[in-house]
Structures are given as structure tokens and as C-alpha cells.
Amino acid sequence: MAVHNLKILPEHYESVTHFNPLKRKTVEIRREDDRKFAVGDLLRLNEWDDEEERFTPRSSGFIVTHILRGAPYVPEGYAALSIRPANIPLEALIYD
Image (cartoon, rainbow, N blue to C red):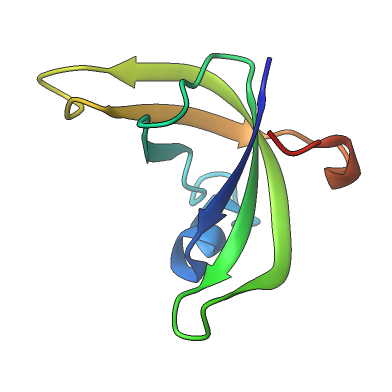
């Protein structure tokens, strides 16, 4: 199990942390250029403000429950990660 510290734009952060589970975004499409994701990995998604070029104070933890790779569904070098809230303290998510 690895912990991945990742940026996420505000509109996507709002979607993955939506209070209503029926409206919550449960998939992240991520490039696998310098890392390889695995089921059971933890994601620390840190909200990134592109206009201000800085992190906001918001951050949340998620666990990877399924991964889809390869054609015809996912472009080469990318992975579709099914995620769910990890429900663990962010302090426990040591950076990779």
C-alpha cells in the first residue's frame, strides 16, 4: 500500500467530497507517468487553486477500490481509479 499526495482542482474537489453519496464523484482519472497505482493505495487529494497557484487549506483522504487501465476505455499511460472516502485522519497519510 502506498500513499499518493495529489493536486485536485476546486470543482473536482467539491465533487469527490459531496455530502450526498448519490451525487459524489467516485472515479479519478490519473496519469501514471511517475507512479503506479494499486488497489488499497491511499490518495490524499489536496485542493489546488490554479488562478492563485497555491494549495487551499482543504484536503481529504480516499482509498483506491478498483483500477481500470488500457484500451478501449482508458488511454495509454492513464488509470481510472475507483475511490471512496478513507475515513482516517489526514495526519496518518504520510506523503509518498
